[in-house]
Structure formats: structure tokens, C-alpha cells
Length: 548
Image (cartoon, rainbow, N blue to C red; front, side, top):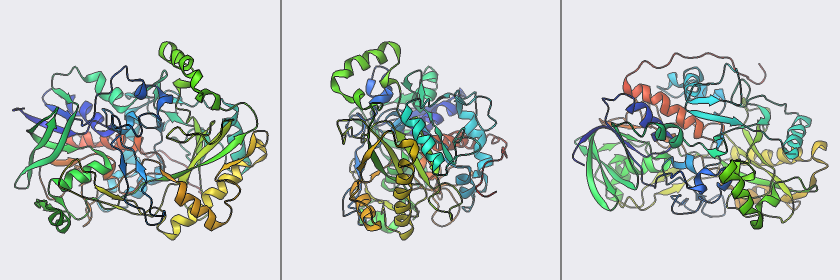
């Protein structure tokens, strides 16, 4: 490619899709998107069928298939970490749960030096801009004109209703909208499903504008490094369908996510100088915060046998699959037309936390992400984990070969506070799931089971059984202090020219929920900053604070 683009976007995932749309809206901007994975073909049922979400994970055609280094507080085991390797990124293979997080998350962001304009009031207009909340009419906290159409629940299965009632009996009230005034409580969830099909960021933002002559989207385009002339980024080196070439751009925007972005920065000579020299990378700029501050959510499955035949378990039987597939293919209905994560809630594990630190995803079926089932009969479960862990990890290069995955060290369970919250989480989940409202369904706990009771037994089980909730973030965080990587007011990488970062890596702190929605909000706001537009006026809508 001999032409010079105005913007080269590295990664066609959740953030990259938003930027592709917004930056190319001006016909004078030549925009190139480079996505290492395949296209999200319309006929690909593993992407677009909501209930097929377990299939892409672990499959090399859809998943980067990362895994951590041996985790020292989890018996030295490696934790598998799926990341989307397809147009739409992880938003094309995730659980389709749309959660903003708590408003206080963003007020916490604003305490980071330089991030004062990333409080909730400044973020809320961009959440509204991106969404069409069809399931929550006439809410002052929600948007209705955006490209991302959202459905609610419906959480009609009697197990959902029993769970909501049980939570109320345990002291946690219903909430009308976890993305509205009050996150704390239980109720139906928003989902990225439109008329029975997954609605990824690529489908919402890229596909409607692919006809623009100034927008070029290249799949199977693996970016190896950013090319610098002195301290100015002038292009990228990429392998596209077997041919390696240098593509020049006036602005390079990294949108590869919290794992790939720091890896690419380091491969390009941006990072801790000592580490780069040890690996054999020529240093362009010493920026010690690159790859630091790694945060994630760890989760477990608390599973129960169900005494009544009301769960979704029979729908998992292989002989039913043809009929289920038929209903979805021709009518977009049936068990395949939902992600099944239709409800859950947010609670506090103790009275010292200021906002909910536990998230529950309830499922009317007992199944793991890889599709394995603990029982042949009926069952149900909650996905559960602390949201505000004080654990911090890091990402480091293993090689100068960009195809060698970096070393991921999350340090799960490494702090006293994290371990305490895990004990509280399991005990609270059991308290809810053993309320009278669940009695007619409760056939006994399958996992962790009655043999796990003491604090130490709980921690031992978590260390053996827990999986990542797939929310890596914060590895190239915004700020103006010595460990910051990105300028909060421009998204430019500190110390160099022509290079920006827009994805989950710029979060100062992981949000109290799934990160898909916050990533796109950041991209919406970043688009205005990149284009030099006046940011949307802050919206000081009130929100719930416990005790106030």
C-alpha cells in the first residue's frame, strides 16, 4: 500500500469499530482498519447465534488463546484467557452482557491525576450516544438514538424469578435497570442481541458504513510493530495475507485490547527501557507504565441441582440441536436466540464498601463456558466474583517475535483483601440461593459442594476452580503521573508523536461489571478528542449511593 492514511486503526474490535465509524464520517479522512482475524461473516452461526457463544472460545479461528504464567496463589496453574480474533474482536465471541458499571467507577477514574474529565457526568453523554435502549423506555439515564440496539431480559424462566425473589429475601432489592439510576440490586440485564442475533460493535458500527469510499477494512492483517522516524510514529509494519509491508499513516491508533496493545507498544520500542533492552528491542521512548497495572475479574460457578424440570438443561441435548437450529435459522426464535444471561445483580459483600463489589450472572442451566455440564439432570448456577479486587499484575514480552504471546501475570488471590472478599462472596451466594424462594427448585449444591465450608476450603476451591471473567484492562492507563501511558485529553501516548491508544488498556481501574460497554464509551469520547471536537456537555444526572 503506497498511500498514506490519515488514521490507521490497529484492531477491529469493540473500540476500533467505533472509531472506524466516527473518524470516517468526515469524507476528508482516509481511514484504514487492520484486523488480524477473519471477517465476521453474516452466515457464521458461531458468532451470530447467541446461544452458540461457547463454541468460538478455544478455537484458533476465533480466539487468540492466551494463558497466564503459573499463578503463584492458584497452585501454580495457568489460567486460560480467550480474546476475540475476528472482526468485532472479543465483542464477537463474548457473553453479550451489556453493563456500564457503577457511576462511581468513573468518579473513581477522575481521581487519577489528569483524568478529572472522565467522571461519570462526562462519560454519561457518551453512553447515551452509543445506545438504543429498547428495553428501558423513557429513562433519563439511557440513550435511544445510538447504533447499538439493546434488548432487555426477558428473564421469564421461573428460575430467574425465584432467584430475584430469593435475593430480596436475603436483603437485596429489585432494581429496574442496572444501567440506570440504581445498579445495586437484582433484575433483568441488557444484552447485545437484536432480533435473535448477536449485535457486536462491528455489526453496529462498521457494517452500516462499509460503503464509505474513505473507509478501508482489512482482515487477516497482522500488525507486527509501529514504525517510527525518531519519536514520531509514521506507519505500521503488517503482514497481510502472507505479505509483510509498511503502511504509512499520519496517526496510528492502537485498539488491540489490554493484552495486544502493551505488547505492540513494547515491540515498537515504547515501554520500560531496561525490560526492552533485556528482550532485544531498540528503545524509542522509556515509558515504564506500559504493561503494568493489569486488572481483571476472576469468577466461579456456584451450581445447584434443580428438583423441577424447568431449567434449560434439556436444550443442551445433542438430539435437540437440529430443531433448535431450525427455529433460529428461519425464525430467530427458541433456545438459540438468547445468550441466557438474562438477569442477575450487584451486591455489597460487606458494609465497608461504598458501592457493590460483587456481580451475579444467573443462568437457568448448569454449564461451564467450555460447554461441560456437571449433571445430566436439571440445574442452575450463578457466575460470581469480586469486582474491585486490589490485585495488580503485569504483561511482559517473552520474545521480539510478535506472534509469541507475551507473559501474562495476573496475581489472582495475592492480597488479603481479595481473599477476604472471595470468602464473603461464596457465603453470600449460598445465603441467597438457600432462601425460601428457591426451596421448590433447590436439589442441593453441586459446586463447590458441601465438602467446601471453612474459609480455607473456600479459598482452596477458588484457587482450583476459578476462571477469568475475560475482562483484562488497565495496562496502558490514562493519566499524567510517572506510570501513566496515555494522555487523558487526547489519547496520545506520552513522549511520542502520532500514536494514540483507545481500548480497555487505558482504563485507570477496571469497572464494576463487564467491560464491553465501557470500552465503546471510551471510544465514542476518544473519537471527539481525536477529531478536535468539543466534547459533549457533562450530564449531572443523580445516581444511587448507598447510605445517602
